[in-house]
Amino acid sequence: KQQYFENNILKEFIESVSMENAIRSALEERKFVMFFQPLYSAGDKKLRGAEALIRWPDENGGFLSSPSEFIPRSEERRVGKECRSRWS
Image (cartoon, rainbow, N blue to C red; front, side, top):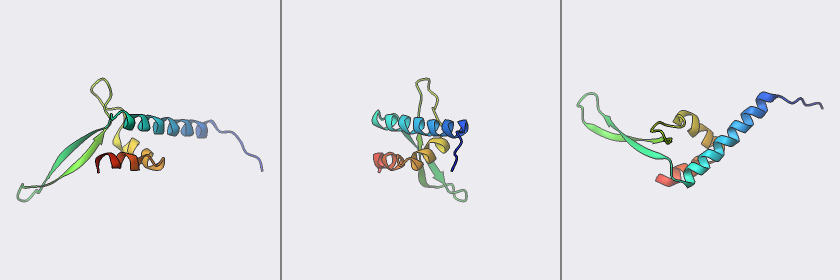
C-alpha cells in the first residue's frame, strides 16, 4: 500500500497538538477565567439562573481563542475533563 505525504494533514496535526499543549499550560497556570451570564425569563423578567462561560484571556486584555474553538479541541484531546474538574 502506498501512502502520500500531505502538508495539510501535517499542518492540522501540528495545530491540534499545539492547541492541546497551550490548553494544558493555561490550566496549569490558571489562566482560564469563568464568567456568569444571568438568564432571565422573558415573560416575567425574573432571574431564572446563570450560564457559566469560560474564557481564555491574553496579556492585552483580549481573549486568545474563541470557546467554540478551544473547547471542542480540548474535548477531542481529552483535556476537557481537566477543564471541567477545575470548577466542579
